Length: 485
Image 1 (cartoon, rainbow, N blue to C red):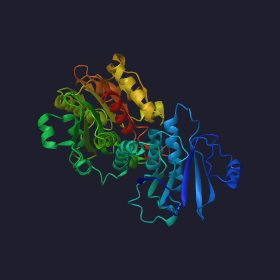
Image 2 (image 1 turned 90 degrees about the vertical axis):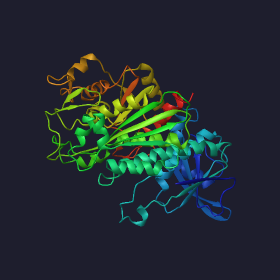
Image 3 (image 1 turned 135 degrees about the horizontal axis):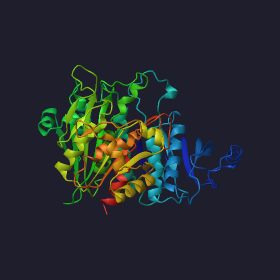
Image 4 (image 1 turned 30 degrees about the vertical axis):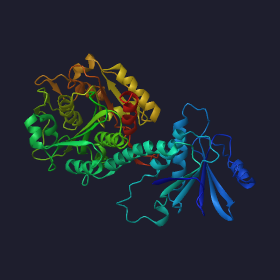
């Protein structure tokens, strides 16, 4: 979606929108519009919409109203995003190519107006490249938004917000693509294309390099696939000589479960088992595009988990890069094996000040938290609070879960240093305990289990059904709040 700014309304505009606070209508609403709004019980509640027709310069135009709720709400920015998203959801397939957002009567700040635009753009994203039979009234027609009468500074505010939108959209693209299109090598190629010319440094490890480093844990997951595994690191140095903040993503581009194969129904969803890597890639793109004044590195462990004559078996023992040995009891508990080596390599290679990993790791976290929150596990109270505050501010909400020695004992193995699953209970916790064993020297670390939030079966605040882009905004806000001063 293209967004542009004008001082006056374009001639012949057919679709004109206003964002209104609760109980307030713009002066452009004539008596018929006011009566219609009242009859439809439009009050300006958050995300509520109403439209009608008015005469404008001798022509008839559709006037749309989107509610932003109470002006002094604590959730003001989120509500403004909902208002923008509500407009897109209503008119993206209306036949109109342009929406004029009239802010001439608005007292929104530049930042508030940018959040309206962010909601408009993010909700308009849909991945239709494989849909060849759409009827005309199903196709997205809305291509651009022209902002009229915006506040001072809105273009600068939007420049920063649009970088965030680009990152979220990139994550959604990666997560939505089928596994025959996005696999470890093509994931890397897609990122190389998107980061070209940005100033970011990309490092790629192939299987021979990983084998030389001793990454038996990660390589064991991918050995049943005809697709070679990869590690991709994206480094952005925007903050002098300070140690970087590191983000690590699980990138299982398709997860059959391996020899411990998953049931057939729903297995198609496992194309998005690389949602953690997708979030890290999108988060890094946002930071790079807005030239974040911070040192940040994003690392993605990329594998495909397939059943094959060469696949690892339950009962196998593998040796991780850290030297710790792992007894494989279930080959479907593979994400932690990928992250084990990715986390260790990240710490050795980049010596980060702190490290946060993102992974669609366990179904157990969905049982615990549903689809409203991602699970947060951490060895550091300060980092936990920073993540929780950042998530609350941008809508990527996280809820802290416990870890501790009692849970850690559940993954002790009688023949290796650890096993890759615990018992029937506390599945998401024992997964986090597993990862913590690969954190060096008490480095502040957090693990975020996004299994319930990376994909949505119904439209949400700023997304349609499908990939949400969860994690990108959390990464961006955490860096802005804590690493950019």
